Length: 98
Image 1 (cartoon, helix red, strand yellow):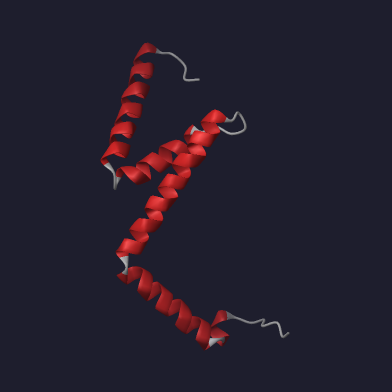
Image 2 (cartoon, helix red, strand yellow):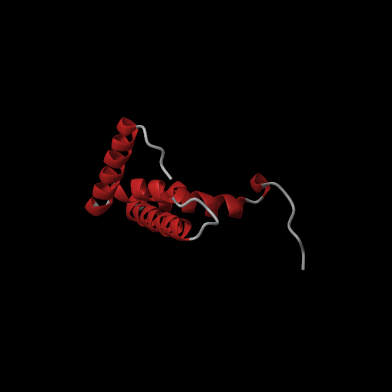
């Protein structure tokens, strides 16, 4: 088995594949949207697991997941709005968030 070592510019076939892939991603916004939705759900699931398990903080994953999903789903926007209003109430009362 021969190991190929070299620059990308030395291999025109790889440049052609890369150019085609970039062109395909640019012309397919639905694929990009699907990938964003999948990553949003993945972050939300990680956030829920983080809330249940004491190993990691869940809000670090949950909030960005809801932000991504709020661009596509109304329910995620509502949850995000509720979280924002809850944090505003906590700021006004001066309580710490656990």
